[in-house]
Length: 227
Length: 251
Image 1 (cartoon, rainbow over the protein chains, first blue to last red):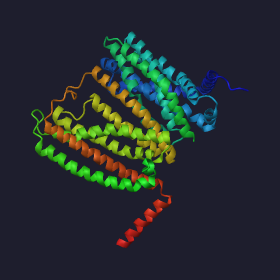
Image 2: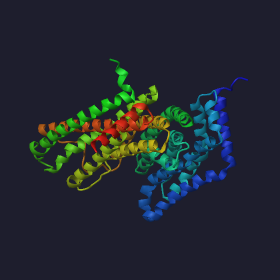
Image 3: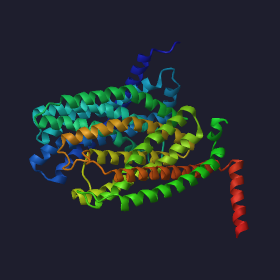
Image 4: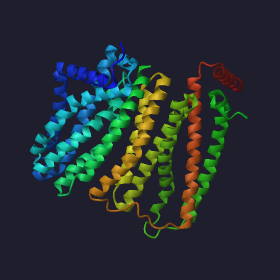
């Protein structure tokens, strides 16, 4: 039997990961609840004044999204590493970068996309205008895949290490800074009556760069970790 | 002479010792000259008084902090591509010196900022990117420290250093963009007043002194790493035995 085409392998890994995630729904809820809780801690910390909260909202939602997607990274490869699936993926006749891309895509669909959907609701609680809410969702839609892709490199490097969670945050958070700046910046620009176009373009460019390079770098890192 | 003769750790070890001594001596001499120019020859600044003299430490450390990251990534990449042990050891040895230079640059910057701007810290683009650079160094060191197998540590660290060096310009420009969008810092760092020639000379000599110090410190550290990793080899054992015999003879 000849090996299936690369795209078929991509779809196969994607379907498998989605199925596994749907069988364990409580894991997904944890990330989402974490996101909501972090966002709602800020008004408690700085006080309920509406003007202050409105200025802070883009940054707060974005930082919470950053932390939530970082928290979810630990699960990206850990399960497959523990039961040996990852070694099979590495041995598969397809480019490992492609399979890693499929895993990241599935991971984003179950952990990133819910954040995108939920964020406008949280923004509403911070009294953001309708246009700013739309842009907030749009920036998260462009930004969270980049977070997942860059984070995959960190997750692959820290696979199976002592204290991998804390180490992962140290490695990955500095690399998330550009996405944070342009994501929160776009919403802020809209809130101040400016156009978000330039920010969104840069977010799109970052995503394009990450889609191109990150799966490959993560594949190299996985091979190193599995040796 | 074979150019790669010194690529083997046991031939590089004695060479690194000699070079480290030379670089340390140069660092002391150049540092003395630079500090003399800085304290006694360079004139008092018209606007900043005597406080500006910290520039002779601050600017060289900031230069070295950025330069060393690139050098570290270079050696890490060479180690990953050609599987040369010494390159990876060099990358590992550079990291603490680079982190130290970054910390010094931030620290002296804070000391300079307090009398000049009235504040220890502003969220200026340069300061923020320097802080992020410190995080990148610490991440590299933490990753290498967390992996027990030195071979995996080298290669994982190399991937991280390369990803980091690709990201440094992106981070730098995004931080600059962020800074222009937010209310800018009240004092611009980029609009530096034209400098007196003696000040410039003092700074350049101090930069060379720091360069020599970084080379010396890195080579000393790489010697320690070589010994630690080659501790099971014959030449390292002979060396340790010789050192022990020497101590006993002296006692």
